[in-house]
Amino acid sequence: MARASTVAVATREEVRRALTGRRRDVGTTLFQVGLLLTLIFALAILLVLLAQVTAQALPVLRDRGGQILSSSYSSVAERAGVRYGIIGSLYLMVFVVVIAFPLGIGAAVYMEEYALDTRFNRIINANIRNLAGVPAIVYGILGLAIFVELLGDVTSSAGAEGKSLLSGGLTIAIMVLPIIIITTAEALRAVPNSIREAGFGVGATRWEVIRSHVLPNAAPGILTGSVLAMARALGETAPLIMVGAVTGFLATSGGLTETLQERFTALPTLIFAYTKKPQPEFQEVAAAGILILMGTIFLVNLTAIILRNRYERKW
Image (cartoon, rainbow, N blue to C red; front, side, top):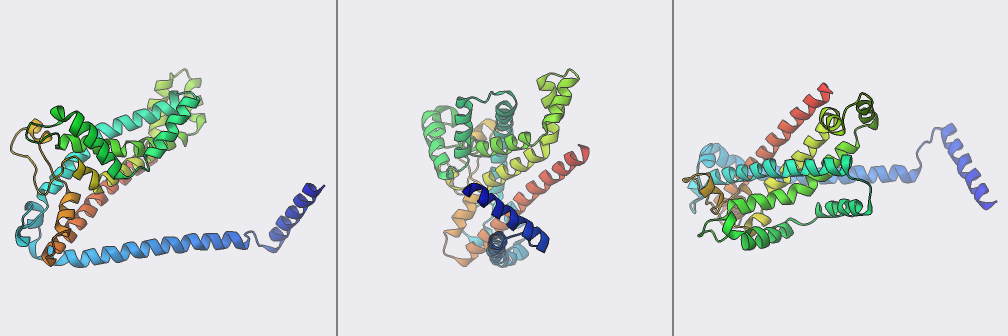
């Protein structure tokens, strides 16, 4: 009786709000306003930081221009640049594209389209989601233990002692792998089952349905997740320092094998090194490096948006 009375009261309150035009209660409105204020506050902090970095970087970019892009690390502020940092970051992105993308997308396809809903698979899914929130330094320790200490003879030359570009690239690829798996799985889950059923109805195999219908429809979401993964990989510093990133050195004179097995640098590492110096000239160089890093991430995002829009128009 008490439960029926409660339901009747709730129903009358809902009808009253509908008749008077009050479709939202005060709590819902206050919650939405709070979320909006939080968003505005976060954007304001971001704009302040961006304005400060831009104000520091514009003088050195105006005076030196492309010299910063073509110069390597130097202890003299007037000759300091980020050339090898950009090259090293591009090498790391190649590792992400070649290793993390195929493994992450393949794992997500298997978990969503082939794996049964068993307790073991649910545990794996939960662990993957937990790994996506692990701090980057933990992946750096993992890379130090596996790729530097355990597999050091394979990942580097004798002089590098396991700390090499190959170790850094493998560590970064593993770090972003859970993000790619999760975003790809969500994109596959968003594809309507009617598309799969239509493919099965005309006699297509499971792989043919996935290849020709599911993956093309999920491509926009997969690209979005890939962009998030690459943006995180471009901005990480701690795991790279753990596995051998140094300030301003990158082996480019030898072949590809020598480059992969020698010490390396990356753009975040150079920015970190410049910010530690007390001279204001180095702070300006660091600010210029931050703008270059942000520009690189923007270009990656723009490319992914263009590809995503292309797939959306096609399908």
